[in-house]
Length: 148
Image 1 (cartoon, rainbow, N blue to C red):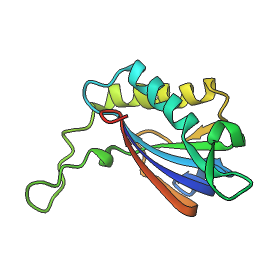
Image 2: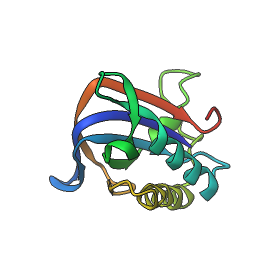
Image 3: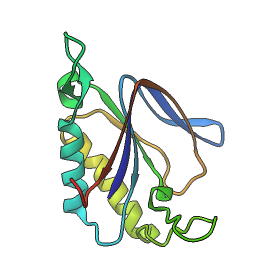
Image 4: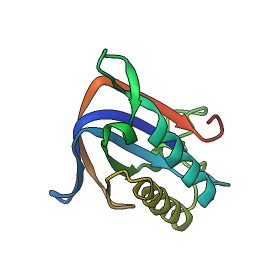
């Protein structure tokens, strides 16, 4: 799986002008399932994200995890993280998991975060979404489970 994490003071996702998910201080997580990913991959990624020390401690150092800060997560599916731009000018997305499998893994990933006691909301899989956020830092981290 691939994930793009953004440390936020707030984030929300809307579908057709209606907010369907939001979070306060914590992480906006854009996530993409890839061929070969399974529930174990989703669970391992959720655990890794919950423990990453991306938040400031009392001395201003990134020393605290999402779990330690009791931060929230907003998880948004984004198959475009699988973009292949190696040929031509139009990205290819054949590197993303098939929609049915991707939806299952996206939902399983969000559930795994919830099971780790991370307050988690989601966007709507497959919908045209508008994402709003205030990136804090800015802090943006790219994760690929091939490299975690």
